[in-house]
Image (cartoon, rainbow, N blue to C red):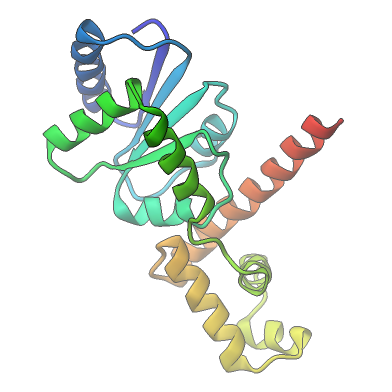
Length: 194
């Protein structure tokens, strides 16, 4: 397991994942750096998101609950990150890990295509979310964008649905992470160009 790093927000789950990976590694071989992230909760803090974004592994898999996966699908994450559901049967997680450690070329292409085609926020949804997270009311956003209250409210609800968010409070928390994520990706893109 020397080339596979595991991050988890629960120490017991981390040990279980390491044990599963150990069993898989005994019978199979994989080269290259791999990382496994497991998030039991339905939210991320800034440190966890930064760790995921700055991970230098060739391939990364993230196991999370459906609500958090919905949030990830709304972000523009790098193509080497794959996703799996955490709230499924153990044998399905074991199979996902085995497929991740020993992928076929077809699996890699499907994973990258799925990330590329994920539900991304439209420019209007991004702008409304950005302004709302800054504390501006929907009515003021509508006036500044010269759009109706109903249209702006629809953009906000649509963005919340794509991010897997059900309340305005959750939007304030995850929206800040979303904005930070966009800023991190822009900085990374600028560094790679320079």
